[in-house]
View 1: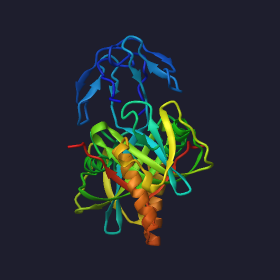
View 2 (view 1 turned 135 degrees about the vertical axis):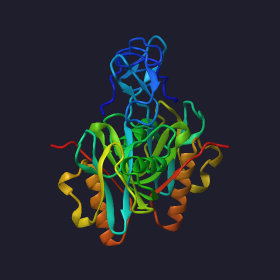
View 3 (view 1 turned 180 degrees about the vertical axis):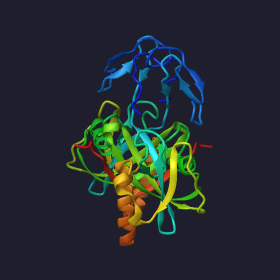
Length: 183
Length: 183
């Protein structure tokens, strides 16, 4: 989802100019009619790593990008939410799954798409789940069943890989990192 | 910094309507002329807890909100950045300080202002620092010198409080939480 172009001021409808405002260091879209500066900033994508016994719940995407590939339930954080609320909402929307949230597990910057991805650990409250509108299929996978070659996003692979490694080591901890553009 | 109103489409300049797009669950600003959906999402504020020996660097704000109060160097993440790059840039811009980043220390949701605040631990590379354009004064504070009643933001108090508690306990760890509106 690329950010929409800023040709016009969303407040008053006048054409905007691209220039560095006084006291700023980067060019911004500035409206000379109503003085609004239109900043554009990275977006947060928030989700969960839902556990049921020793298996993890994954969703097969019904929408682009990466339609048909598997992902953790996650999506764009909405206004007025906490990251925890966003994680619970996305897990319900994409997998119709009720979870109890655990700790924040992974924080990943993805600068070439202007996103920051955040995953919480989560425990499924029951084995009831079903595809939401943006999901083709939901299923539980043991570590040896994860479809590694069909994972939709590298942030999801990062979270899953560290999850299984930490579980094996018996020391679950927080991980941060960055995902650089594919070469 | 409240988000600007969306009365007009930033792409084509037509008036927008507020309604729930097909397949969505929340009202969005939709342009019927060019079909753009204008999402609005929370913003990330990223900064550091800069350490020099046993003291912490704080900045006294030269700008609103909370002009004259003390804060950790932090600011809005920019497009194309990682959270780590944003933390380093803000520390340089606000305190003219060069640091080596450590671990992510705190992640706080502030839903009533649509922000998520993130603080890294950081080690000052030398004792050279100076106020940037948005700063009146920069200084190092020992734990007993922190001006607790003059801290600009509750996320900064949260980060500092947990930092000193963890340091005392000898176990620095990642903290997450949320800051609810003042009653």
